[in-house]
Length: 137
Image 1 (cartoon, rainbow, N blue to C red):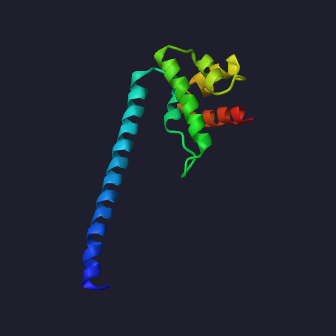
Image 2 (cartoon, helix red, strand yellow):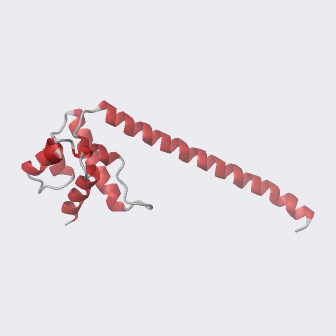
Image 3 (cartoon, one colour):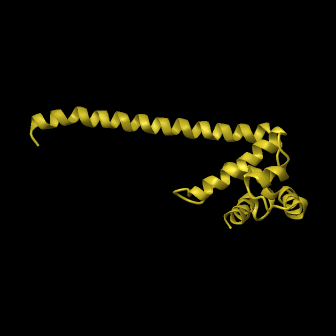
């Protein structure tokens, strides 16, 4: 590469480096905002522990559309139950599956052996997986 070509390429490389740094900074700000929103929702509303997992449910990189849909459905139940706008049973039937029975919703809210689902061996992710399976057929 000639000296002139190297001098012409240097500003382009510097511009690309600036753009990459700006993109990385933007991604870091978005991640921090998402963590802040999740923390806010968990602190603001008293909801069953099982619904907490909706904020962080993933199924591995890259996250599948099914995982996004499951997380969104349970987040809608979380918001409705936490704000008092919708009982958990109605939210589960509306956003997860209309086939959820009253007994299943009660078991979901209470978790294994009367405790919170998030504290059990299976955790909230298991509840989300079961509900997602029932919704997908």
